[in-house]
Image (cartoon, rainbow over all chains, first blue to last red; front, side):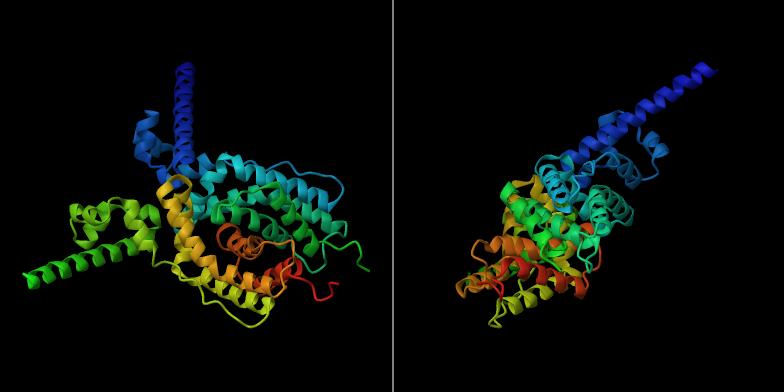
Length: 197
Length: 197
Protein backbone atom coordinates (compact mmCIF):
# COMPACT_ATOMS: atom_id res chain seq x y z
CA UNK A 1 0.00 0.00 0.00
CA UNK A 2 2.71 2.44 1.07
CA UNK A 3 4.78 1.54 -1.95
CA UNK A 4 2.01 2.21 -4.45
CA UNK A 5 1.24 5.48 -2.61
CA UNK A 6 4.89 6.50 -3.05
CA UNK A 7 4.74 5.58 -6.72
CA UNK A 8 1.70 7.83 -7.17
CA UNK A 9 3.47 10.64 -5.32
CA UNK A 10 6.50 10.31 -7.56
CA UNK A 11 4.30 10.39 -10.67
CA UNK A 12 2.45 13.46 -9.36
CA UNK A 13 5.70 15.27 -8.57
CA UNK A 14 7.11 14.36 -11.97
CA UNK A 15 4.11 15.68 -13.87
CA UNK A 16 4.00 18.88 -11.77
CA UNK A 17 7.68 19.45 -12.51
CA UNK A 18 7.10 18.85 -16.25
CA UNK A 19 4.21 21.35 -16.28
CA UNK A 20 6.28 23.99 -14.47
CA UNK A 21 9.28 23.43 -16.74
CA UNK A 22 7.18 23.81 -19.91
CA UNK A 23 5.40 26.86 -18.49
CA UNK A 24 8.77 28.48 -17.77
CA UNK A 25 9.99 27.59 -21.26
CA UNK A 26 6.92 29.17 -22.91
CA UNK A 27 7.20 32.19 -20.62
CA UNK A 28 10.82 32.94 -21.47
CA UNK A 29 10.33 32.39 -25.20
CA UNK A 30 7.02 34.16 -25.74
CA UNK A 31 6.30 36.20 -22.61
CA UNK A 32 3.22 35.74 -20.47
CA UNK A 33 0.98 35.99 -23.54
CA UNK A 34 2.63 32.84 -24.90
CA UNK A 35 1.49 30.70 -21.97
CA UNK A 36 -1.84 28.89 -22.33
CA UNK A 37 -2.97 25.78 -20.46
CA UNK A 38 -3.63 24.13 -23.85
CA UNK A 39 -0.05 24.65 -24.98
CA UNK A 40 1.46 23.64 -21.62
CA UNK A 41 -0.62 20.45 -21.72
CA UNK A 42 0.43 19.68 -25.30
CA UNK A 43 4.15 20.21 -24.62
CA UNK A 44 4.32 18.50 -21.22
CA UNK A 45 2.06 15.58 -22.12
CA UNK A 46 0.10 16.23 -18.91
CA UNK A 47 -3.70 16.30 -19.31
CA UNK A 48 -5.46 19.63 -18.84
CA UNK A 49 -7.68 18.14 -16.11
CA UNK A 50 -4.54 17.14 -14.18
CA UNK A 51 -3.05 20.62 -14.58
CA UNK A 52 -6.24 22.21 -13.26
CA UNK A 53 -6.20 19.79 -10.30
CA UNK A 54 -2.86 21.31 -9.18
CA UNK A 55 -3.40 24.92 -10.24
CA UNK A 56 -6.95 26.29 -10.24
CA UNK A 57 -6.18 28.89 -12.91
CA UNK A 58 -3.64 29.94 -15.52
CA UNK A 59 -2.69 32.80 -13.19
CA UNK A 60 -1.95 30.37 -10.33
CA UNK A 61 0.30 28.32 -12.62
CA UNK A 62 2.08 31.48 -13.80
CA UNK A 63 2.61 32.66 -10.23
CA UNK A 64 4.37 29.40 -9.32
CA UNK A 65 6.41 29.28 -12.56
CA UNK A 66 7.51 32.90 -12.07
CA UNK A 67 8.64 32.32 -8.49
CA UNK A 68 11.98 31.13 -9.87
CA UNK A 69 12.45 34.04 -12.31
CA UNK A 70 14.81 36.83 -11.37
CA UNK A 71 17.18 36.18 -8.51
CA UNK A 72 18.14 39.34 -6.67
CA UNK A 73 21.89 39.99 -6.53
CA UNK A 74 23.57 39.51 -3.14
CA UNK A 75 23.68 42.65 -0.98
CA UNK A 76 27.19 44.15 -1.13
CA UNK A 77 28.74 45.51 2.06
CA UNK A 78 31.75 47.64 1.17
CA UNK A 79 31.30 50.06 4.06
CA UNK A 80 30.23 53.02 1.89
CA UNK A 81 26.90 53.94 0.28
CA UNK A 82 28.66 55.01 -2.94
CA UNK A 83 30.55 51.76 -3.47
CA UNK A 84 27.56 49.60 -2.47
CA UNK A 85 25.29 51.49 -4.88
CA UNK A 86 27.84 51.27 -7.71
CA UNK A 87 28.22 47.50 -7.24
CA UNK A 88 24.47 46.88 -7.18
CA UNK A 89 23.82 49.12 -10.17
CA UNK A 90 26.50 47.40 -12.26
CA UNK A 91 24.97 44.02 -11.39
CA UNK A 92 21.49 45.26 -12.31
CA UNK A 93 22.78 46.58 -15.64
CA UNK A 94 24.43 43.22 -16.35
CA UNK A 95 21.18 41.39 -15.61
CA UNK A 96 19.24 43.80 -17.82
CA UNK A 97 21.69 43.09 -20.65
CA UNK A 98 21.58 39.30 -20.38
CA UNK A 99 19.20 37.75 -17.83
CA UNK A 100 16.11 35.94 -19.06
CA UNK A 101 13.81 37.88 -16.77
CA UNK A 102 14.74 41.07 -18.60
CA UNK A 103 13.04 39.78 -21.75
CA UNK A 104 10.03 38.51 -19.81
CA UNK A 105 9.35 41.41 -17.44
CA UNK A 106 7.58 43.66 -19.98
CA UNK A 107 4.98 40.94 -20.57
CA UNK A 108 4.45 40.71 -16.78
CA UNK A 109 4.16 44.51 -16.54
CA UNK A 110 1.58 44.41 -19.32
CA UNK A 111 -0.36 41.60 -17.62
CA UNK A 112 -0.30 43.57 -14.35
CA UNK A 113 -2.08 46.43 -16.16
CA UNK A 114 -5.18 44.32 -16.76
CA UNK A 115 -5.21 41.16 -14.59
CA UNK A 116 -5.36 41.69 -10.80
CA UNK A 117 -4.00 38.18 -10.03
CA UNK A 118 -0.97 38.89 -12.19
CA UNK A 119 -0.51 42.34 -10.65
CA UNK A 120 0.33 40.45 -7.44
CA UNK A 121 2.85 38.34 -9.30
CA UNK A 122 4.44 41.49 -10.71
CA UNK A 123 4.58 43.15 -7.30
CA UNK A 124 6.32 40.11 -5.76
CA UNK A 125 8.88 39.87 -8.56
CA UNK A 126 9.59 43.59 -8.44
CA UNK A 127 9.99 43.57 -4.65
CA UNK A 128 12.41 40.63 -4.88
CA UNK A 129 14.55 42.28 -7.56
CA UNK A 130 14.72 45.66 -5.81
CA UNK A 131 15.19 44.44 -2.22
CA UNK A 132 19.02 44.79 -2.22
CA UNK A 133 18.69 48.52 -3.08
CA UNK A 134 16.43 48.95 -0.06
CA UNK A 135 18.91 47.09 2.18
CA UNK A 136 21.89 49.17 1.04
CA UNK A 137 19.96 52.43 1.36
CA UNK A 138 18.64 51.65 4.85
CA UNK A 139 22.18 50.90 5.98
CA UNK A 140 23.39 54.17 4.46
CA UNK A 141 20.60 56.02 6.26
CA UNK A 142 21.61 54.41 9.58
CA UNK A 143 25.18 55.61 8.97
CA UNK A 144 23.96 59.11 8.14
CA UNK A 145 24.97 58.92 4.47
CA UNK A 146 21.49 59.46 3.00
CA UNK A 147 20.26 63.04 2.71
CA UNK A 148 17.77 63.63 5.52
CA UNK A 149 14.86 64.60 3.27
CA UNK A 150 15.17 61.53 1.02
CA UNK A 151 13.35 58.21 1.01
CA UNK A 152 14.75 54.81 -0.04
CA UNK A 153 12.11 54.81 -2.80
CA UNK A 154 13.80 57.88 -4.33
CA UNK A 155 17.04 55.94 -4.61
CA UNK A 156 15.44 53.01 -6.42
CA UNK A 157 13.64 55.36 -8.82
CA UNK A 158 16.84 57.33 -9.51
CA UNK A 159 18.83 54.16 -10.27
CA UNK A 160 16.40 51.66 -11.76
CA UNK A 161 14.45 54.39 -13.61
CA UNK A 162 17.16 55.44 -16.10
CA UNK A 163 18.41 51.84 -16.50
CA UNK A 164 14.95 50.41 -17.19
CA UNK A 165 14.24 53.36 -19.47
CA UNK A 166 17.25 52.55 -21.63
CA UNK A 167 16.67 48.80 -21.62
CA UNK A 168 13.00 48.73 -22.55
CA UNK A 169 11.94 52.18 -23.78
CA UNK A 170 14.71 54.03 -25.64
CA UNK A 171 16.51 50.70 -26.24
CA UNK A 172 19.90 52.42 -26.16
CA UNK A 173 22.92 50.37 -25.00
CA UNK A 174 23.48 50.13 -21.24
CA UNK A 175 27.19 50.90 -21.48
CA UNK A 176 29.50 51.26 -18.50
CA UNK A 177 29.84 55.05 -18.91
CA UNK A 178 26.05 55.52 -18.75
CA UNK A 179 25.75 53.26 -15.71
CA UNK A 180 28.49 55.23 -13.96
CA UNK A 181 26.78 58.57 -14.71
CA UNK A 182 23.50 57.24 -13.29
CA UNK A 183 25.22 56.23 -10.03
CA UNK A 184 27.07 59.55 -9.75
CA UNK A 185 23.93 61.57 -10.43
CA UNK A 186 21.95 59.62 -7.82
CA UNK A 187 24.69 60.03 -5.22
CA UNK A 188 25.07 63.72 -6.09
CA UNK A 189 21.40 64.34 -5.30
CA UNK A 190 20.53 61.77 -2.65
CA UNK A 191 23.58 61.32 -0.44
CA UNK A 192 24.95 63.71 2.14
CA UNK A 193 27.73 65.54 0.29
CA UNK A 194 31.28 65.37 1.67
CA UNK A 195 31.40 69.17 1.81
CA UNK A 196 28.11 69.52 3.73
CA UNK A 197 28.32 71.26 7.11
CA UNK B 1 -18.47 54.93 -64.29
CA UNK B 2 -16.96 57.70 -62.14
CA UNK B 3 -19.94 57.61 -59.81
CA UNK B 4 -19.74 53.87 -59.18
CA UNK B 5 -15.96 54.22 -58.73
CA UNK B 6 -16.64 56.83 -56.07
CA UNK B 7 -19.13 54.53 -54.39
CA UNK B 8 -16.55 51.74 -54.28
CA UNK B 9 -14.01 54.18 -52.86
CA UNK B 10 -16.41 55.27 -50.16
CA UNK B 11 -17.12 51.66 -49.25
CA UNK B 12 -13.41 50.85 -49.13
CA UNK B 13 -12.70 53.87 -46.94
CA UNK B 14 -15.57 52.98 -44.68
CA UNK B 15 -14.42 49.40 -44.14
CA UNK B 16 -10.81 50.48 -43.62
CA UNK B 17 -11.96 52.98 -41.01
CA UNK B 18 -14.08 50.30 -39.28
CA UNK B 19 -11.12 47.90 -39.20
CA UNK B 20 -8.82 50.58 -37.75
CA UNK B 21 -11.38 51.63 -35.15
CA UNK B 22 -11.93 48.05 -33.96
CA UNK B 23 -8.16 47.39 -33.92
CA UNK B 24 -7.67 50.48 -31.77
CA UNK B 25 -10.50 49.41 -29.47
CA UNK B 26 -8.99 45.93 -28.98
CA UNK B 27 -5.56 47.45 -28.51
CA UNK B 28 -6.60 49.83 -25.76
CA UNK B 29 -8.69 47.22 -23.93
CA UNK B 30 -6.40 44.20 -24.16
CA UNK B 31 -3.00 45.45 -25.29
CA UNK B 32 -1.27 44.28 -28.44
CA UNK B 33 -1.78 40.65 -27.44
CA UNK B 34 -5.54 41.22 -27.62
CA UNK B 35 -5.46 42.09 -31.33
CA UNK B 36 -5.98 39.26 -33.80
CA UNK B 37 -7.17 39.54 -37.38
CA UNK B 38 -9.93 37.01 -36.54
CA UNK B 39 -11.28 39.20 -33.77
CA UNK B 40 -10.95 42.44 -35.77
CA UNK B 41 -12.85 40.79 -38.62
CA UNK B 42 -15.59 39.52 -36.28
CA UNK B 43 -16.09 42.90 -34.61
CA UNK B 44 -15.85 45.09 -37.69
CA UNK B 45 -17.85 42.80 -39.96
CA UNK B 46 -15.10 43.15 -42.59
CA UNK B 47 -13.94 39.86 -44.14
CA UNK B 48 -10.43 38.66 -43.31
CA UNK B 49 -9.53 38.54 -47.02
CA UNK B 50 -10.48 42.23 -47.30
CA UNK B 51 -8.41 43.11 -44.24
CA UNK B 52 -5.40 41.30 -45.70
CA UNK B 53 -5.89 43.15 -49.01
CA UNK B 54 -5.25 46.47 -47.19
CA UNK B 55 -2.71 45.30 -44.61
CA UNK B 56 -0.43 42.41 -45.55
CA UNK B 57 0.10 41.38 -41.92
CA UNK B 58 -1.19 41.84 -38.38
CA UNK B 59 1.93 43.92 -37.71
CA UNK B 60 1.14 46.28 -40.61
CA UNK B 61 -2.39 46.78 -39.27
CA UNK B 62 -1.04 47.43 -35.78
CA UNK B 63 1.46 49.95 -37.10
CA UNK B 64 -1.32 51.98 -38.74
CA UNK B 65 -3.67 51.68 -35.75
CA UNK B 66 -0.90 52.78 -33.37
CA UNK B 67 0.01 55.81 -35.44
CA UNK B 68 -2.77 57.71 -33.65
CA UNK B 69 -1.80 56.58 -30.13
CA UNK B 70 0.11 58.96 -27.94
CA UNK B 71 0.18 62.59 -28.97
CA UNK B 72 3.30 64.38 -27.83
CA UNK B 73 2.63 67.45 -25.70
CA UNK B 74 3.31 70.85 -27.33
CA UNK B 75 6.85 72.13 -26.81
CA UNK B 76 6.80 74.84 -24.10
CA UNK B 77 8.93 77.95 -24.57
CA UNK B 78 9.20 79.79 -21.27
CA UNK B 79 12.71 81.07 -21.92
CA UNK B 80 14.40 78.88 -19.29
CA UNK B 81 15.46 75.23 -19.33
CA UNK B 82 14.17 74.69 -15.79
CA UNK B 83 10.66 75.99 -16.45
CA UNK B 84 10.41 74.22 -19.82
CA UNK B 85 11.50 70.94 -18.27
CA UNK B 86 9.09 71.30 -15.35
CA UNK B 87 6.16 71.99 -17.70
CA UNK B 88 6.96 69.02 -19.93
CA UNK B 89 7.52 66.66 -17.01
CA UNK B 90 4.22 67.61 -15.39
CA UNK B 91 2.45 66.99 -18.70
CA UNK B 92 4.17 63.61 -19.08
CA UNK B 93 3.17 62.64 -15.52
CA UNK B 94 -0.43 63.62 -16.27
CA UNK B 95 -0.44 61.49 -19.42
CA UNK B 96 1.07 58.55 -17.52
CA UNK B 97 -1.71 58.87 -14.94
CA UNK B 98 -4.57 59.02 -17.40
CA UNK B 99 -3.79 58.67 -21.12
CA UNK B 100 -4.81 55.49 -22.92
CA UNK B 101 -1.34 54.96 -24.36
CA UNK B 102 0.03 54.53 -20.83
CA UNK B 103 -2.00 51.34 -20.42
CA UNK B 104 -1.03 50.08 -23.88
CA UNK B 105 2.68 50.87 -24.00
CA UNK B 106 3.86 47.89 -21.90
CA UNK B 107 2.28 45.52 -24.43
CA UNK B 108 4.11 47.36 -27.23
CA UNK B 109 7.39 47.18 -25.29
CA UNK B 110 6.80 43.45 -24.81
CA UNK B 111 6.03 42.96 -28.51
CA UNK B 112 9.19 44.90 -29.42
CA UNK B 113 11.22 42.33 -27.43
CA UNK B 114 10.27 39.55 -29.82
CA UNK B 115 8.81 40.88 -33.08
CA UNK B 116 11.14 42.98 -35.26
CA UNK B 117 8.25 44.61 -37.17
CA UNK B 118 6.72 45.76 -33.90
CA UNK B 119 10.09 46.96 -32.60
CA UNK B 120 9.87 49.59 -35.36
CA UNK B 121 6.39 50.57 -34.19
CA UNK B 122 7.70 50.92 -30.65
CA UNK B 123 10.65 53.03 -31.77
CA UNK B 124 8.37 55.41 -33.70
CA UNK B 125 5.94 55.80 -30.81
CA UNK B 126 8.75 56.36 -28.33
CA UNK B 127 10.44 58.94 -30.56
CA UNK B 128 7.15 60.81 -30.98
CA UNK B 129 6.44 60.90 -27.25
CA UNK B 130 9.95 62.01 -26.29
CA UNK B 131 10.55 64.55 -29.09
CA UNK B 132 9.54 67.61 -27.00
CA UNK B 133 12.23 66.77 -24.40
CA UNK B 134 14.81 66.72 -27.19
CA UNK B 135 13.58 70.07 -28.52
CA UNK B 136 13.68 71.76 -25.12
CA UNK B 137 17.11 70.33 -24.30
CA UNK B 138 18.64 71.34 -27.64
CA UNK B 139 17.38 74.87 -27.10
CA UNK B 140 18.87 74.88 -23.59
CA UNK B 141 22.17 73.68 -25.00
CA UNK B 142 22.16 76.46 -27.59
CA UNK B 143 21.62 78.98 -24.75
CA UNK B 144 24.47 77.41 -22.73
CA UNK B 145 22.16 76.06 -20.00
CA UNK B 146 23.06 72.37 -20.43
CA UNK B 147 26.23 71.12 -18.73
CA UNK B 148 28.93 70.76 -21.39
CA UNK B 149 29.57 67.06 -20.81
CA UNK B 150 25.89 66.10 -21.02
CA UNK B 151 23.85 64.69 -23.88
CA UNK B 152 20.13 65.28 -24.53
CA UNK B 153 19.67 61.50 -24.06
CA UNK B 154 20.82 61.88 -20.43
CA UNK B 155 18.03 64.39 -19.83
CA UNK B 156 15.32 62.07 -21.19
CA UNK B 157 16.64 59.14 -19.14
CA UNK B 158 16.81 61.27 -15.97
CA UNK B 159 13.22 62.49 -16.38
CA UNK B 160 11.31 59.70 -18.10
CA UNK B 161 13.27 56.97 -16.25
CA UNK B 162 11.97 57.65 -12.73
CA UNK B 163 8.47 58.50 -14.00
CA UNK B 164 8.15 55.34 -16.10
CA UNK B 165 9.65 53.35 -13.22
CA UNK B 166 6.92 54.51 -10.87
CA UNK B 167 4.12 54.12 -13.36
CA UNK B 168 4.85 50.60 -14.60
CA UNK B 169 7.37 48.95 -12.28
CA UNK B 170 7.00 50.05 -8.67
CA UNK B 171 3.42 51.20 -9.36
CA UNK B 172 3.69 53.94 -6.75
CA UNK B 173 1.59 57.09 -7.24
CA UNK B 174 3.04 59.79 -9.50
CA UNK B 175 2.29 62.60 -7.09
CA UNK B 176 3.24 66.23 -7.64
CA UNK B 177 5.97 66.18 -4.98
CA UNK B 178 7.73 63.24 -6.63
CA UNK B 179 7.49 64.84 -10.08
CA UNK B 180 9.01 68.05 -8.69
CA UNK B 181 11.91 66.16 -7.07
CA UNK B 182 12.64 64.39 -10.37
CA UNK B 183 12.83 67.72 -12.21
CA UNK B 184 15.01 69.32 -9.52
CA UNK B 185 17.37 66.33 -9.42
CA UNK B 186 17.74 66.33 -13.20
CA UNK B 187 18.42 70.07 -13.28
CA UNK B 188 20.84 69.76 -10.36
CA UNK B 189 22.97 67.27 -12.27
CA UNK B 190 22.47 68.20 -15.92
CA UNK B 191 22.15 71.96 -16.12
CA UNK B 192 24.87 74.53 -15.67
CA UNK B 193 24.51 75.63 -12.04
CA UNK B 194 23.87 79.29 -11.26
CA UNK B 195 26.95 79.28 -9.00
CA UNK B 196 29.27 77.70 -11.60
CA UNK B 197 32.34 79.71 -12.57
